[in-house]
Each structure stands twice: as structure tokens, then as C-alpha cells.
Amino acid sequence: MSTNVVIVGAGVLGLTTALILSKHENLSIVVVAKHMPGDYDIEYASPWAGANFFPVGKPGSNLQKFEKATWGELDRVCREIPEAGIHFQETVIYGRKKDAGTATGDWFGELVREDAWFKDVVPDFRVLGKSELPDDCDTGTTFTSVCLNTAVYLPWLLGQCVKNGVTIKRGILDHISDAPSHHPNGHASIIVNCTGLQASKLGGVEDQNVYPGRGQVVLVRNEPGVMITVSGTDDGGDEATYIMHRAVGGGTILGGCLQHGSWESQPDPNLAQRIMQRSIDLCPALAPKTGKVSELSIVRHGVGLRPMRKGGLRVEKEQIEGNTVIHNYGHAGYGYQSSYGSAWEVERLVLESLKGNGKVKSKL
Ligand code: FAD
Image (cartoon, rainbow, N blue to C red; front, side, top):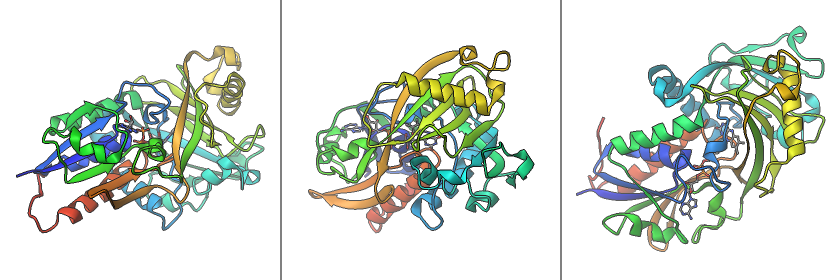
């Protein structure tokens, strides 16, 4: 007999979790979600991400553990499965001491360290010499990272789940306890909550520590030749510059900002102008003929709300109204780079819950 599992949410966390759990025989898995790959909506963070692997977890934190674990799988998928839409990118990170204590400076605190914990995780890590730094930067590192094309990667993840027998369906839940009714058998032993920012509103969860971290981006056709970030700008403590060239024709993401607590879904044209100008200033290869914003070929402007959480991401088990719920949300600006580590922790919690009843076998 199989054990029914309902996963709520089809963002990168819901789909990665479904993929990992689908490798176990006798788990009958349904993913139910309001938004699916292909949708662009302010309630759906995953399509808006760059997305790359820029580790920011503090040593000893769950985030750091999950990021470290995730690198190995992103590296493997990148090497072995080109159709997943991930490629390796030469990466440059610049830090400015004056950004310490700002929204973006705090966010990138670990990323900009010259003795970063991930220096032995990613390949080719090297500290830049003073002569290699822009005038206004104090630190710099370079390494090889990855950039994912979310428009290709999310459908690929979904396809892998379907191939492994996962049922995918649309649905809107008012309460987490409604999840079992979405399984064809009408009941579920385990619910996995991957609702991202909506965990702040979903009945039975209503996590008041969850709030939006607004990010605005511009997607352009121009190619930068390198993935590059600076910890802050002089235009405001919640703005930073980052440039990511997506794999397989995905264009280049120019960012960005981290606006704590803002639910604004519409792009701010002035911020867009600043993002584009700063990107060209940092990376002249984006506009080699004129050095002007008008040389950028814009695909779209975008806004996504990162699912921030005071106290950090939440991957843990809770009993709610007699249901076993495993939460997996609150991944802020690092949902892709911590996705596999988080999903493996959910897997561990699922196996722990089912231990002893002999119901779960690995297909591998
Ligand atoms: P979401 O993608 O928001 O998915 C939530 C899912 O739950 C959706 O399917 C939704 O429909 C469903 N749902 C919610 N409530 C309900 C309900 N009541 N009923 C039914 N379904 C429901 N991360 C990185 O690792 N690297 C990056 O480079 C990066 N860049 C980013 C850039 C920007 C501009 C932004 C905004 C984010 C970035 N992130 C990045 C962060 C990353 O995008 C998020 O951490 C991640 O997408 C969160 O995924 P999620 O699955 O938790 O949530």
C-alpha cells in the first residue's frame, strides 16, 4: 500500500521536493498549486529569479548547510543534463566596506568575504588583487558558479516529476488542512508546505515572520560575458548591482534591489533606469558601441517578491489539526541555491515520520 503525500506549491522548492520524494517507491505524490511553471505572477517568486548560486548562509546555519549540499547537485545537473537550462559562468564579486549594515550589504555579507566558507566548494576561487578592483570597491573574489534559466529549469523540474509518477494539479487552498482533499484518494499522511511568501496568509500556518523582499529586474538580450555583482550602490542602501547571463538563450538579468516589506508589484521606471545605467557602468560589454542605456535590448521589466523570513528559512515538521505538515518555505533570495539541500531535509523528515511502518522504499 502506498503513502499519500500532498505538496502545496509548484515553485522551485515544491518541485525540487517532489522530485526528491518521487525517487521513493510507495509514495503517491500530488503537487497542488495556484501557480505553475509558465505563469508570471507577483505571488510566484520562482520565475523572476536570476537565478544563480551566490552563497550567503552564515557558517553553521541551516542555510549554509543547504547551500553547500545544493552546489554538488547543480554542478552535476549542469554537467550531465544540458536540457535543464543551467550553465557554468565565470563570476566576479566586488565588496564595498561602506555597504556594511545596509539591506544589500547584510544580504551579501558572507558572499563578499575573501575568506568565504565556500572557497573550497565552488571551483577556481581566487581573491582579486587591489589592481583588479574598481576604484570604489575594497574587496573582490572570482570563482566559477552557475546560472539557471528559470523559464527552462522550472518546466524541466516539472517534467522530471511527471516522469516519476507525480500528479500535478491546479488548486487554491484556504487552509493547509484542505491539502489532503486534493489527493485522488481524498486523504494524505503527509502534507509538505512549499507556499513561499503565501505562508504568511495560508490558514493554519499564517507565519507572521514571513514578509516580502521586493526585487526588481530588467531582462535584456545583451550579453555581459561574465556574472558580476557589487554589494551596494550610492543610490540607496536597498539597491545593489548584479548581472546574470542565463543559459540557453534566456537573456541577461540586470538587478536589482532588496526592498524589505514592499508588496509593490509594478516596476518603478526610475529604478529600472538606475539598474540599467549601473549595469553598463560595471560591465561596459553590455553596451559596447555607445555605453548608453538605449543600446540595451529589453525583453521585459520584472518584479518578484522574495519570501523573506525573520529567523531564516523554515524546514521542520509540525502537527496541524491532526495532519503531519512538513514546512519548506522562507527561502528569501536563495531558493534555488538551497533547493536540493532543503528538499533532502524534507526527505529525511518524511522518512523519519514513516519509519517503522515499512512503507517507503527507494527506487534507486
Ligand atoms: P514560489 O516560487 O513563490 O512558489 C510558491 C508556490 O506556492 C506557487 O506555486 C504558489 O502558487 C503556491 N501557493 C502559495 N499559496 C498557495 C495556496 N494558498 N494554494 C495553492 N497554492 C499556493 N534565488 C536563488 O537561489 N538565486 C538567485 O539568483 C535568485 N534571484 C532572485 C531574484 C529575484 C528578483 C527574486 C524575486 C528572487 C530571487 N531568488 C533567487 C529567490 C528565489 O526566487 C526564491 O527563494 C524562490 O523562488 C522561492 O521559491 P518557493 O517555491 O518557496 O516559492
